[in-house]
Image (cartoon, rainbow, N blue to C red; front, side):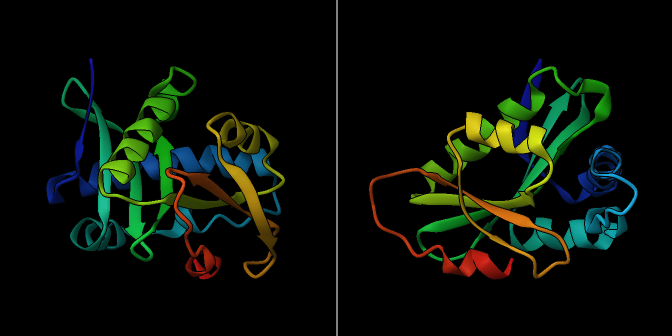
Length: 167
């Protein structure tokens, strides 16, 4: 049975390993010219995120099989990043359950919206987020590729999404 919980310092190495494997697939699907920053991320960054943001893990039989990170941008908007699951459990619903756990967390914290970026040319992932009721707010090329800023409304309150532009 899959359980979801806040990450601890002792999870950092496994989170980093899972994210590297997941983002290697992401890079492979984008093609040889893609530059995926997550593949260069050291374990220290995971530790920093555990200390300063919210890192949620999916765990099965005591093993971390996925994670998602959530950062507060302002009182109304949370930013989701480094979301990935172990390729060994890919397409088994783990990612959807993990994302739903993150959505539930953000609603519980009172956020009006969640935001995230992904490569707009990764059509499979864009369709995935559309299916989860995210919409494309805008695109940018500031990171060297066309990034889509996806947003999910969590309430009927107004919010300022502009802090997500620089993430």
